[in-house]
Picture 1: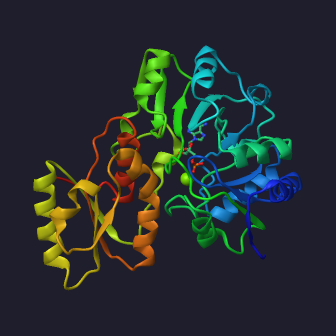
Picture 2: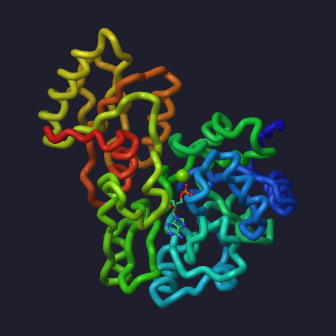
Length: 341
Ligand code: AMP
Ligand code: MG
């Protein structure tokens, strides 16, 4: 199959919507990362998403809508959902709610809940609206690879597998949506993202963060969100995260880098402010703060692969605000190889 990479405009969005209506897959930009979309109500089309990604069938998809009314046939919303939608939709927030029968079980991997999001990106919004159906879309990477934040990333992973990718430039947030479960008495963050626990608490009063957000699942432990079970975002390189005071972290990283530099291709992920601490060693600048790091992390992981890097040494970011989302992705990319300095 030839994959067309097309600049997103009125005409290409109309073509992409026609493809979605006929059960085909389309790559499209959202404000979080690029998505791989199909008609969420077409079981065959949804199966094709799992096949194109190599995604395990037990990892459910997020269903994307363009207006609140489109949620009503899909699930049973509650007061918390209404308040969060009011505050954060359209935007990078996914809500887990009890599903209705119209949603094929392949979308929810057999769960009785469904994940729903209303994206704010104008191209995503237009595509959903013109398709005339809810769009199931996971991140547009091959399973296990870093999520795509540029159309070219999606092309790397999906060339030859899908008919079309809409190019809408770089994604704004850079990490996937916040996933919050609203099926119990208290809202629970299952995956941190651009809408932070602090922001959710400001609307709902009380919010929990699943503690498996920042640690690996224990042997035999049930995952509150199936995505937690799977290896994620991993670069080909062995990656290690270092936590501690910036100067201590830098001197530890420098020592380990120097010990391996003769035999390994090493790279350091650093905040802009700390670059000078690494002298002439190879660094990737992840920007001045956690928002910048969220924007940069997946592209940096992909670049490391492209450059043949075999060892990544990374600084850590404080786990508050969007820093929790950055550290969640980094910890998984590092396979939870985290060192306290
Ligand atoms: P992705 O589409 O690649 O951004 O991944 C979607 C994430 O949402 C995965 O981590 C899923 O496990 C999670 N998810 C989707 N549906 C549900 C659900 N019904 N219950 C819990 N987590 C879900
Ligand atoms: Mg994903």
